[in-house]
Length: 603
Image (cartoon, rainbow, N blue to C red; front, side, top):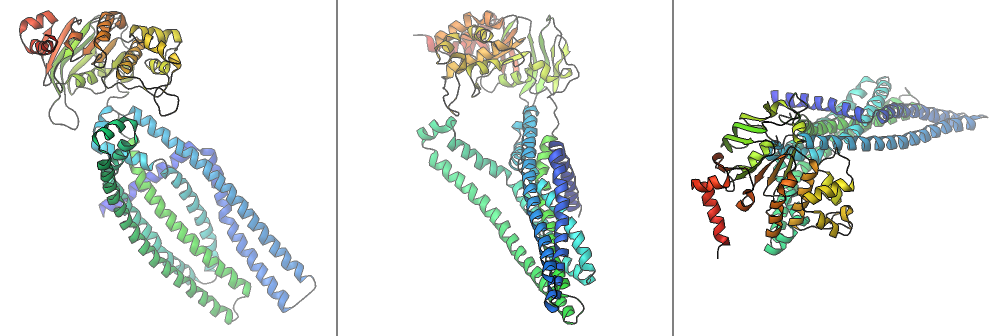
């Protein structure tokens, strides 16, 4: 029993957190909703009492006609009608309040998801179990809190109504209340069992859901459209998507069929209990122990109590289900940040003398057993250009990630001016680093906004943006665009323009130049630039760099010749270092790589 009891306890904690979340997101709407819930719980009781008066007054008027009897009946009917009108108005107002509350809460939850998504460590995104948690959080979190809002509202409303009617029914006979609970309790228990089954299914099939969604994205996005058509992969992905969705649909239908069967059985039990109670009341009426109005009131009360109790237990079942699914949302928002925001120091030393130093740095990715880097020793002095070369998979990009503090080393230190970067807030350090990756990322915004993204704290004037573009050799390309800096990129939102791979890389270089950082990391900076453009970039690289330092990661050894120092990395270890001339004289890894490339240019 420890497992199920623990699950119920966790579900209750999640429900409590969900209610706090709702209150923090929309306190005013939540207060309005609570007041309306109380009113909606009381109005049916008033209606029952007034209905009894209508029937009794009508019965007396029929049995003993008297002057003014019609007015008495009409008065009570008018009051019943007035309560009905108030009930409708309160219901409409409650629906409006609940909708407003749900919209505010949904947007608030989306904001929490977005804030956590951009704050969580990069390493989590490379872990499959995290991806499952993120998928379930994204899938369930947007609508579950709103459902909890409505569920709590309906549950409280039915609870208030049930308390009032239960007191009324117990004045008739204590057994009626017991029959009521016996009729409806199985339905509530069934809801809880069904909720646990559905939660278990969604948890176990999260990876399958992600696979299906991946195929959907592949088939519907521009990024993959060309390759799908060139290689004829469309039908294959359509079939794989269909197979996955068939499995998911069959699993959900199995749970639905089982729940439908149980619901039918519990409803039959409830109907039998209802009409047994009616027969019981009829027996009392025949004996003359109650008036017709009392019979109608009790029968209506029993019907409403049965509905209220069924809705109450059903609502509790749904709340239990929602709280189970919110577990993934809270697992996500509670993830610790081992790198992001860590470190006590919020500033760096202003003057640079020793620069960036790696000492005995070893690093292993969380999902792997073999280290990606072993005992790395590397220095980047102020205003120095350092190159890092090696074969694919040697560890070049991994080292760049550590230098940006996207990860921290498991052994050794990375320090700036003698200060361990782990003692500095990661966000403070990253503001001093610019990166141009081989897989350039541009946003579907204007050219100016993409360049200005390099330093969001700086006033993005056209002059400053074009100055950065000129340093990257992108100013001529920008002037040729229809709207210059105001040209929108991408084709998703209309009137956008696609750039070539080389143009995208130049724009990324301009963004890096705009940042005026202390360290510029260029991962294959000229991989998509033509040879003439590469030669121009090499000539102007010192101007592009300004007073900062640079780390160039490149397969094109013609690019790295401008470096003051070159490091050669192989299988995660630094195996050589020196200038181009020194490394060529060593006849080691670097010389072999250089000669292998130069053969392609010899006639």
